[in-house]
Length: 109
Image (cartoon, rainbow, N blue to C red):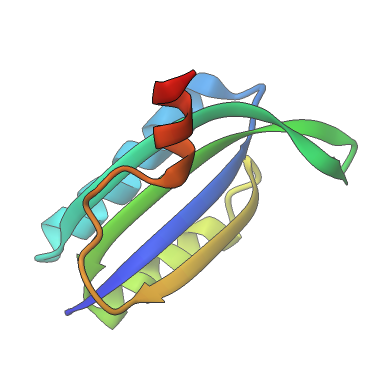
């Protein structure tokens, strides 16, 4: 199993379905033997530029450990989800459980 980081940018107008989608992705990871190491909801933030006439997005960060099969399944689901504006998978060398810089900055404010 490998460690990954997934950043999701959701359409901010679809709060209820966004929560269900994230829960579904978490269930897929854990049901196939993976583990969720870190989950952060960064909230709604203004985009640097409009994407499909949308200027705000809700950011979700997930760090998890899973197999390549899970990664492929998640990629397929994300590809066909219209509420996800952008996403990014990043392979990590180790488990990351400490709060991200984004969350540390929010705690200080």
